[in-house]
Amino acid sequence: MFMNERELFEVTYLQLCISLQAQESARLPKHLGSALRGVLGQVLYRTDRKLYEFLYENGKECKDQQDIVKPYVIIPPAVCGTELVVQKGEELKFEILLFGKGVKCAASLIDSLQKMKRLVIGAQRYPFYLLRIIDTLEQRILWQEDRDFIRAICTKKLLHLKLEGVTGAVVQLQTPLRIRRGGKLLTHISFETLIRNITKRIVMLVERYGGWVDYEEVKNIQILAAKVQTVKEEVKVEFLERYSNRLHGKMDFSGLIGELEYAGDLTPFVPWLAAAQVLHIGRNTTFGMGKVQVYFI
Image 1 (cartoon, rainbow, N blue to C red):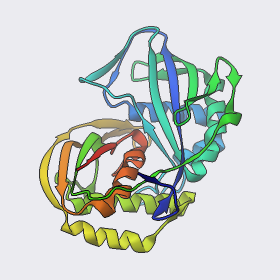
Image 2 (cartoon, rainbow, N blue to C red; image 1 turned 120 degrees about the vertical axis):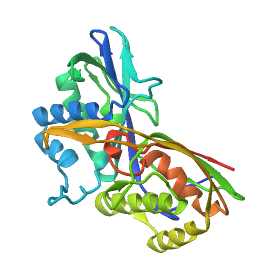
Image 3 (cartoon, rainbow, N blue to C red; image 1 turned 180 degrees about the horizontal axis):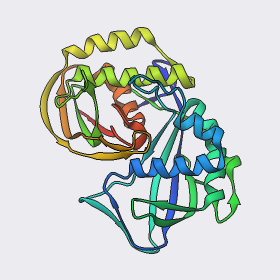
Image 4 (cartoon, rainbow, N blue to C red; image 1 turned 60 degrees about the horizontal axis):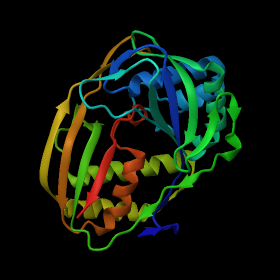
C-alpha cells in the first residue's frame, strides 16, 4: 500500500514530457541524455541566463571536487540496439524531472523552450520542432502549438511505498550506473553500497532544495543494509564517452548495466528502493544515468 504521512522523507517533484518532431531523418546515439542536456543548456543560455545558472552552474565546486547535486534529471528515450533512429515526421520524446525548488523553474523552462521551438540534436545537428509539453504525472498538456496552459502545473510528493514481508529484491540497472570509489568505477554493487547512495542522494536533495528526511533513520538503514546478501549479480560495464565543452575533450562515461538480486529482511528498505526509481542514483543522474527498476519478493 502507499503511505502519504511524513514518515521517512519528503521530496516534491514534477515530471515533464517534452515531445519533438523530426524535421528530417536522424541517427542519434543510444544514450541521448548528454546531448539533450547540452541542447537544453544552449536554449537556456540564450533565453534565460538566470535559469541556466541555477540548473547548470548551481553550486559548482572547483579543484576536482564533485559538483553539488542538481535539482533535475533528464530521462532520454529508451533504445533497443546501438543507436536511436528517428524518421522524418516522427516524434522524439524525453522527460525532465524537477525536484524541490527546481519545480518553481517549470514555467520559465517551458517559456524558454517555446521561444526557441526549433532545436538541433546530435553531432550532425539534426533539426527538431517542439510539439508539446505534458505534465506526465497528471497527463495534462502544459504547452502545445502556441497555446500556454502552465497554470495547470501541479507538484507531487514522492510516494512512500510500504510493503510487509519483503525477503528479496531484484534491481534492474536500466541506464549505466556510475558509482566511483577512490576514483575508480565500482563493478560490484553490494546492498550496503546501494542503500548508502540512495540515502545520500535524498539527503543532498532535501538539504539543498527543500523537503524533509529522517536523519536517524538514514543512519539505522545504512547499518541494517550490511546484513543483506547479494544472491545474483549479472552486470557488465557499458563503455561510453561524452564530449565536454567545459573541458574541451572526451570524458569517460561508462557504467554498469544488468541485474542485481538481494536477499534478507528487506521490508525496512522498501520506501528507499522505491524512491530510487524516480530519483536515479550514482553519478551523472542529470544525463539520465543510474535509472533503476525494483521488483520486490
